[in-house]
Length: 201
Image 1 (cartoon, helix red, strand yellow):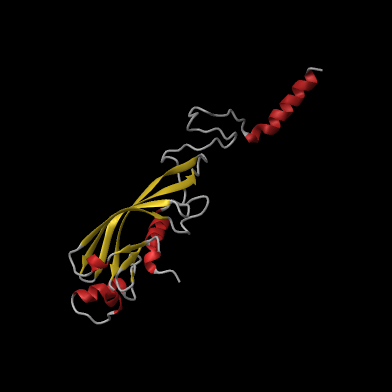
Image 2 (tube, one colour):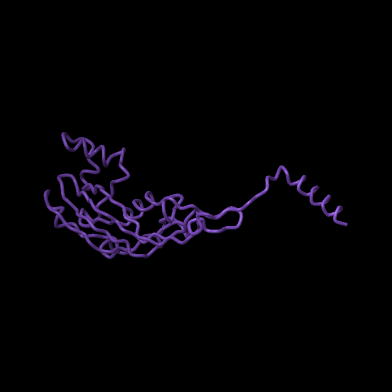
C-alpha cells in the first residue's frame, strides 16, 4: 500500500499542527482526481488544478481557505460550441484533529467541534492523516468541483442558441429567420396550387 506522503494530494502540515496560530500558504498545481463530471461536462482526470490559499491552525484542527482553478471542458447546451476555460471556485473547509473528531464529551469549544466532526459531520470537513501530519486534498478537490459544475453549461449567459429549423448560429446571425406558412393552412395551399396547375393546362 502506498504511503500517504507519496500521494500527489498529500500536503505536509505537521509543523503548523503543533500549536494554534500557525499558518501555511499553498500555491501549487495538483492533478485532478477521477470522477469530476464526465466527458460532456467535467474536469479531465490528471489535468492540473491550481490550489492557492492558506492553512491556519486552531485549537481543534486546521482551516483551509483558498481558491481552486481547474480547466473546465464542455460544450454549450444552446449553440453546441466547445467550452474550454478556467473554472474558479472559492472554498473554506475544516480538517479536525483526530482527538477532536472522536471526542464525545467536551466542554465549551469541544462541543462546537463535535457538531462539526461528529455524527452531524459537515460536508466541508475532511480528515487529517498520519496523526495530523498530512492533509490529503484529493476529496476536497473532487467534492468542491463536482458541486460547482453547471448542469447546463453556456458559452455566455445570453447565448441565443441555434435555429430550430436550419441549425444556424443565432449569435452570429441575430437577424436570421424563416418565413414559415401556418401549418393549419397547408391543405388550402396545396389545393390552391393544384387548382392553379389545372387552370394553366
